[in-house]
Amino acid sequence: MKCPKCLNIDTKVVDSRPVEEAGAIRRRRECEKCNFRFSTYEQIEILGLAVVKRDGTKQPYVRDKLERGLRRAFEKRDMTDYKFRKVVSEIEQEIQKKAGGGEIASVHIGEIIMKVIRKVDKVAYIRFASVYRQFEDIREFKEEILKL
Image (cartoon, rainbow, N blue to C red; front, side, top):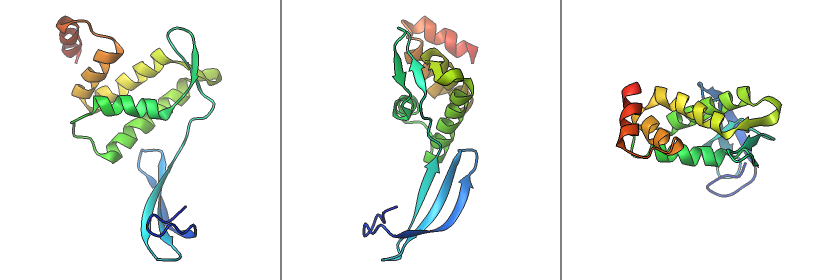
């Protein structure tokens, strides 16, 4: 791991600990050249998973797509980086559980996302659901809000 201050490639791990419920490990590092201390996070990466789209085409799973959609839903909401990483981790764990044979339908991913964010933030849930379910008018918003 390169030092962010002096770009030296020799750094040592000073401390490692799991990030609670986020499926990640936080490592405290120190540069052996300038003694600058910094933290890194390691998390599980889903590899080899294919997402089956509504039209039947397959695409590789891309975490960035999930994060972009969630960031839009949580925009201007009270969401810390830690809480956001925890939500992403929970969603990915559910995806891995449901992805039998290395494939999962995009509709299943959408339902998993809605189930998780509904528990975290109702406004973000409605935002995501409105795009995911393609609400056409205010009546559909109202129906979904009443379900909450």
